[in-house]
Amino acid sequence: MGNSSDEKIVEWQLGRKITNMNRVVYRCPYGYPVVIESLPIKDGKPFPTLYWLTCPHLKREVSKLESAGLIKKLEDRIASDVAFREKMRKAHLEVIERRKRLLTEEHSFREVLEKVGTGGIRDFSKVKCLHLHLADYLAGVGNPVGETVWNLIEKKFCDDVFCKIGEARE
Image 1: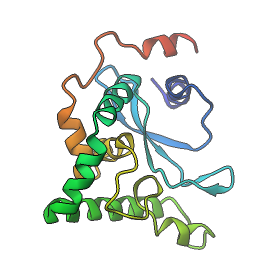
Image 2: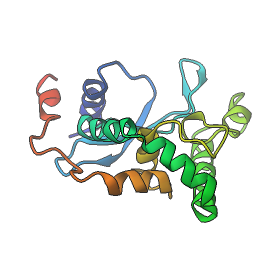
Image 3: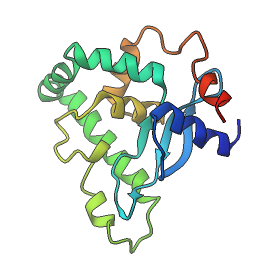
C-alpha cells in the first residue's frame, strides 16, 4: 500500500474527507493505517490533535472502555499517583515538541499550539478522549493513559481484515 492509497483508506475508515494528514505512523499486521500524524494547521486554523486513531476495530474497542467509565478512573489515578501524573505531563510535553517540529518558527499559531497537549488539552490532569491517548502511545509517545488503554484491549486487531473493504472501493 502506498501513500495515495493510505489517504483513501483513512478517509474510508473515518467516513469523511481529510485535509491535514501528514503520514501513517502505525499500521496493523495487515498493513493498514491504525494511527496517522496530522498537520497542526487545518483549513487555516490550529489543529492540536497530532496523532489520530483511524482503525475501526480499535475505535470500537476504545469506545467500550470509555463507556465503562475508564476516563474517570484514569483522571482519579492522575490525581492520586504522582509518578503517573508526571509521566502524563511528560507525554503532553512530548506531543507539544513533536507538533512544534511540524511548524515553522514564525508560524502565527505556534504560540497557541505550544500551550496545549494531546488533543488540545490545557489541563494535563484531565483525559479528553481515550482514542487520542492510545494514538499517542502507538505513535511512540510515552503516554501512560494510552499504554493503559492498549494493555486493557484484549483483541488488538480484527480477524477479518476489515479495512480491505475500504481498499476495494478505491
